[in-house]
Image (cartoon, rainbow, N blue to C red; front, side):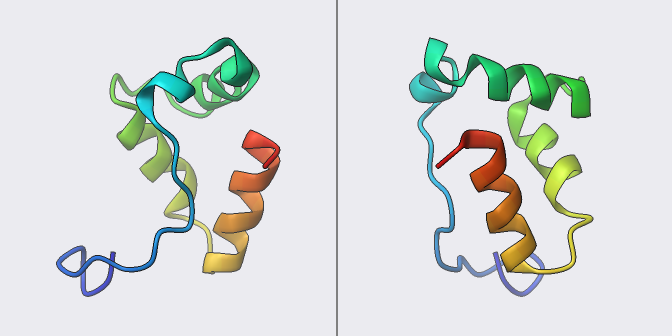
Length: 68
């Protein structure tokens, strides 16, 4: 999101809830749970990705986590 979350920007990563909770992504879920115990995965993603300095860092972290 741009402008403090008011304007949507390009999609850099997309995963459905069904996929996120599939057996394929269990290792990623386990790692995400180590990062944060927030009950909502959106909050987990925010805690994990907001401190990163650039969109390229975010893309790299997502690719590593989900082995895209």
